[in-house]
Length: 115
Image 1 (cartoon, rainbow, N blue to C red):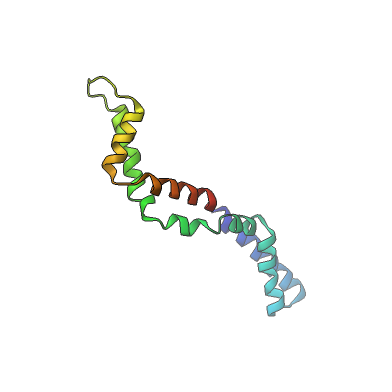
Image 2 (cartoon, helix red, strand yellow):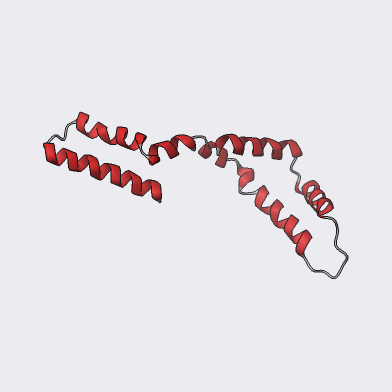
């Protein structure tokens, strides 16, 4: 939302200058992109340019949420049985999920690079 607000402020500033000079040509309008790129909006967009590709990974929405839910359920479910060690719960859930440790490590590294 703050990116949209920053973009609107840049557009308003360029439009105001255009009305002051009565210059609505392409060169005048190109100032919007320059102003946007030099603002926090452009810098944030550059910082997170790789995020969309990373977030398109289906495991982000299908597998990892379920994996986390199962781990937390295994840790916090109060079934009146003695608690198992969290490491054991996590490893059992990981084995049952069908995910490979190499996939998870690859996704974590991709996330670090993207974000």
